[in-house]
Length: 494
Image (cartoon, rainbow, N blue to C red; front, side, top):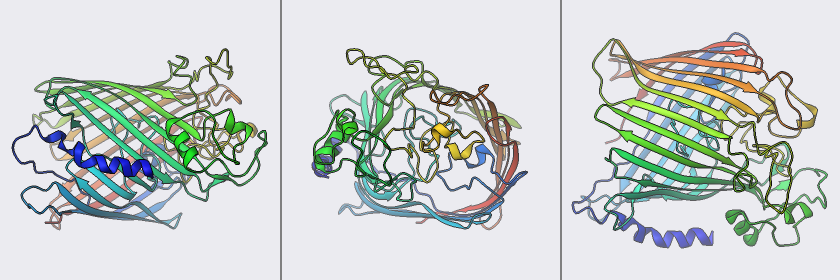
């Protein structure tokens, strides 16, 4: 918290990174205001993978389901000079009610936000895209994909890439720092705390033909209480907490301090750490935008010692900037390859403190319920909770996932049909090898695909009607065919 207060004192100073622009700047705030009704069903009572994945946890895994959704969000200028809206305050709430198979009320967004120029401070839940990757028709970033309900937190960061002073816009950054809390209904832990931060840099102006990107994101689960002993040496129910151990969690140092430090804590980092180091390149021409990216995975230090370099997310996206009015057009395409099978090798070995291995992605020996939130993977949905697959293994009975050694190929497409219908397709093939402790027999293969269409109708001031058909075919999930139909009304405040 002291660190947050220190950063807050810097916000007015950092905000002057726009001072090179002579003319007054009008800052825009995107909002979401809508009412929507959705129905879905399937052949076997399970919702297909691409209908329920990367939907911020609002779509149930089982069906049939009827869903009523609504969102309200607005920002008000609080600057004395109304022609320069540097200071804004906003609030938003999004509510979802699911009925029939499950009766559940969800708040995927509920926040109060203060913005100054391109900075914001908010408290609550807010949907967030993270990482250098396509967030629309891609498979989702490795560490933070939008697959789970947003975690409530205190957040301070930028809303876009902000030019660094005296670089004439050639060097920009995007960053944030946040702390939050996990749910107490987790099977192994309670009162589990959440720390997250990220920093990304861009070389090139916003309108440059070539732009280079690089940065990292860092997530930590720490400070919670175990609901039962796990058999660790010197096991205690209370995990390390307090300000000194918070600092240890933030900087990722080994060991900790205090009476609640166990042998496991003293020989490891405080909390469960994970994230990715991302690199990307963007080339823009008059007609197209080409975006190439690579996310390197880290969990226990293997990446630092250059083991596990094979693992990560590889991606390429191409977008057309102009439409020629054809009856069938493809406006964007994404091709991705995810590989997580190496993990630095089968054994965790320390040779002169240099070699790592058996990274066991999204699992942790202390935070056994792992990198999930309300039984959904926070990171890539292709490393699913054990409860989601047909494969359940005794050695992973109290771990989050039994399948973190995956090879996946994904194709995402979007375009228009007859100039009025927008369509989108996601098609993914994966080979699943389980985990090093308990490999799957035969590496089950899985195909999951979805085709979605939507169009605006001149009814009630404009309604959007949409539908989707999806299928899961393979050995990892149950064979499923399903559909989704919905109607949505968007509106604005003036």
